[in-house]
Amino acid sequence: MAENCGKCKKSISKEGIVICNSDDCMKKFHRTCVNIDDAIYDAIQKNPLISFNCEECKNQSPKALAAKLQTMEEKLNKVYNGVNQISTRMYQQYFQFGNANNVDPKKQTNNLIVVGNNCNSDRLQVVCDYGRWVQVGKFATSTSEDDIIEHLAEELKINKNLVKCTKLVKNDANLSQLSYCKFKISIPDYRFNELFNENIWPSGVMVSPFTPRSQLNQNRI
Ligand SMILES: [Zn+2]
Ligand SMILES: [Zn+2]
Image (cartoon, rainbow, N blue to C red):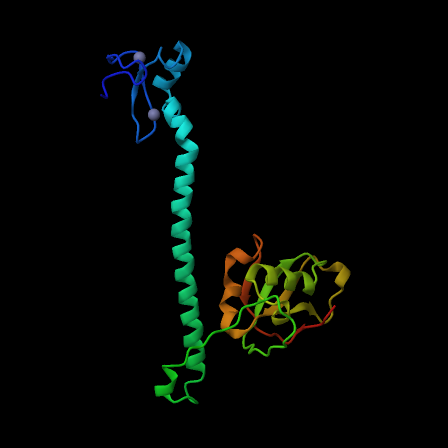
């Protein structure tokens, strides 16, 4: 089969043929049967980046692409579900660890703990623990605390009310002369580590654990 032309079905020799570049196909054709002129034939021979695809494969490619996309989507869903399960378990362990002294260990093993993550509702006021802070910069001086809060709410899918942010300014700073500013930021403890995810910050922004210094005064501006 492979030694006959995919178009006219007649036998082919080694010269003057083109091979379909599609991995599943590899059919051979007389170049004259598939309208490959001298110039294109020459280019295909000389340049490995130029390849020939038969009509059948060209027409199938959107379908093939769709099938590949479908497979990728299924794989992604599996990964997504796995990550969800892991993070749920981490939250559970965090809370069980946090309450370890108060709870009977036998009862504790049956305790399913779920942490709410609906960021659309403002009706209920929630109290969370905030143990740690990060320092983030450098931003243009025009950047406001609300800008940072809005950005994080969107990137982390977290309620704006749960993001704490303070612009850091030195006591004696002349605001008009500053070339940049930094912010002190915290989110509830159980999600704190997400602040160190580089993907939520614009390129070049630096995030480090916040260490209070005497010469820094956290003024609201
Ligand atoms: Zn042919
Ligand atoms: Zn083909």
